[in-house]
Image (cartoon, rainbow, N blue to C red; front, side, top):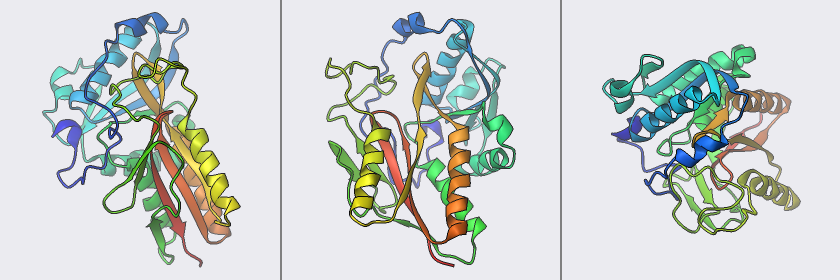
Length: 280
């Protein structure tokens, strides 16, 4: 399957409002910064059609002086994935399940936050809510004697498009009421409407949490893993944001019961998860 997608995945995907059309990246070359942005480790989730595309684009960005990295890693369960076949020997192909990989990778980042400051993740539009899953697993391992659970949202965010996953564990939200190119960089002027983009999902979800508190719902967050465009049509999430969220949730749980909202999102689309840590 493309990008290592699990056959058991019930369709949980961050590509719920996007087409598989790839826009021509050539115009993006003119936008490369003069000073390259330096990364330590970049992890691409999946080595299929999307991951191999991101791999090619990152190579072009580096060749143009837009960014640099110390290590570039592609994670896919298929050792013969497209990225592995097209590799240039400048990247590492890791043959593992995504969730297993991030359990080790993010655990190590939490233990030593220094390298995490320059690390980033290129998410796949076909991936489940992996980063939220890691936060939940960390909480369950930290408090085995407590009930750590995932709850459905009590109220839905005020955005144009939304849908819950079949099990209710993930809530997908979008400002788009149209289909977007899969590698849209979400510029200030929306390519679909041709008008200035007057929205950003992190702000909308922050307002949603404020509204929940006004209703008397004691909820913390949102802890946002924001995927933003970095170069040549490739979006990334900073690992430091994930490590910081885990640390903050640990502090909340140590103080008592807690309920937190976690979201992986871009400006236009997002996946939300609500974590509850029961009393001691």
